[in-house]
Amino acid sequence: MNWKSLFSPGANMSPEAVKSFMAEHNPDEYQLVDVRQPKEYGKEHIPGSMLIPVKELIDRKDELDPAKPTFVY
Amino acid sequence: MSGGIIAYDGGKAVGDEEFGMEFFVSGDFSDVFRMGYAMEDGLQQLYLILKEMCDDSEVKALLGRLAKFEEGHKAMLEAKFPGTAITETASLDTLEGGFDKQQIIDHFNSRTATLDDIIQLGMMLETQAFDLYNRLAVKENDPESKEFFTFMANEERQHLGFLSKEYDRLLL
Image 1 (cartoon, rainbow over the protein chains, first blue to last red):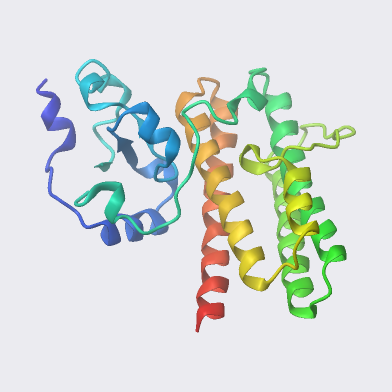
Image 2: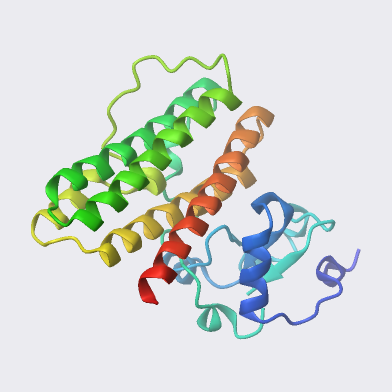
C-alpha cells in the first residue's frame, strides 16, 4: 500500500475547520497526528493528537486507521 | 492542517506522550475505573476548596457549578459502568490530566481568583484530561478500559465545550 493513500484525499484544511470538526465529533471518530519532533510535542500539542514524527511515519503507518478522517500537522 | 500548530488557536496540551499515563499502569479495569473516578473526585474537591477560599459571589457560583459538573460526572460513571466497586476512593493529590492539586491551591492562596482565572484553570485541566484520555484510549488493548478512556475523552470534550461558552460569555 502506498502510505500516502492513508491520508487520501489529502486536502489542506484550515485550523478553524479542523477545530470545528473536532468539536462536533467524538474523539474516536477521527485521528489527529502530530508529525513534529517529540520535544516539540512535549512543549505543546493539539489535545488528543498522537505523535508520529515524520521520519517514522512510513514504519508506523499501521498504527493509523485508514477508515477514519486523519488530520496531520 | 494548513499552517500547522502555529495557526491553531484552540486550547493546547503540554507534556510528552506518556505524561499522566503512569496513573493507569495496572491494566486491570477496576483499577483504571477507580483512578479515573478518583481524579474526577479530586477535581470536584479542588473546586469546592477554591470556592471556600474566594469571596466574590460570581466566582463562588461558577466554582459551585463546576463542582456540580464533576458530581454529575461521577454519577454518570457509576451508571455507565455499574458493578465496578468504588470502595473507599483514595484521596488523590493528582487531578484530571495529571496536575497537582496542592500546587493549584497554593497558587490561588497568593492571589484573588477572578472568573477569568477559574474558567482558564478549568479549560487547562479539561484540555489536559481530554488529551490524556485520548492517548490512553489509543494505546489501550483491553476493550473495557479502551471504552472507558474513550468515554472519558468524550466527556472532557463536552466539559470543554461548556467552559468555552462560559468564556465567550465573559468576553462579551
